[in-house]
Image (cartoon, rainbow, N blue to C red; front, side, top):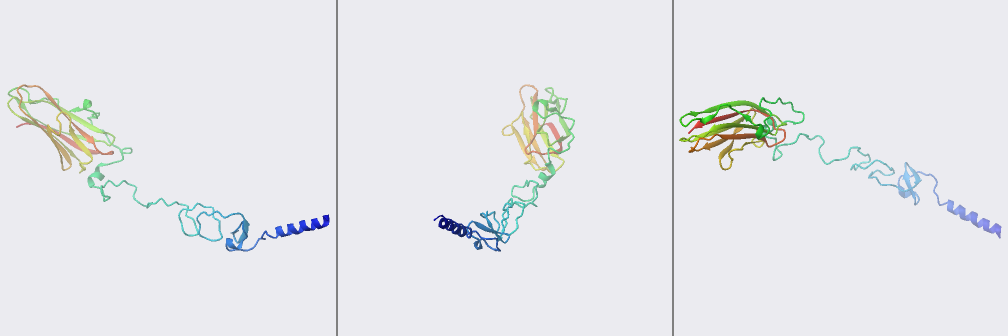
Length: 255
């Protein structure tokens, strides 16, 4: 009885072992037994991991970079042209930027800019007094005009340049203050703001842009009393990196 049992066990083991395939040539997984896959032309125990290759009979472990061929490109597709210009396009519609933008915008980190002699004048309290001489009606019968131009520089790391004058209104006549700024380059007026502090641009002054600069006109009506007044203006940056040499001019004249 025991010999018959041993014979049955031997037969069962032989049948079980016969289910394992020997190494054989293959060109596709379908030619291998269940639980095997075709690798390098040989049926191998295991399960194929699909990593995106379309080639049959290979199990490439590289990450699929989106190729449809049998080889993988190690550079992932970022969805943009790597040869594209990395310089920001400052044109509103994607066209070539305005010449005024190219001429007057620099890298504020690497820019080399020599500050003008009026620095620091980055706040109104540090504003540059353009003239030490009082202008306007210094007496009831005497009018002193003013016409002064300064050469200055707006560096990329400065946010504002401030200037001011003090003057006397007239008792019998109106006077006019005219501030003008002109840049060495044809800077686009979207890059800067020429602002009046003492006289509001919306109600008390006419603030306009000009070709390559800006102007502020302030009308001072005659008054019954002589009392000195101040006029502050500021050249402010509207875009990071704005830089240019410029001239600022103030005129005080009788009307």
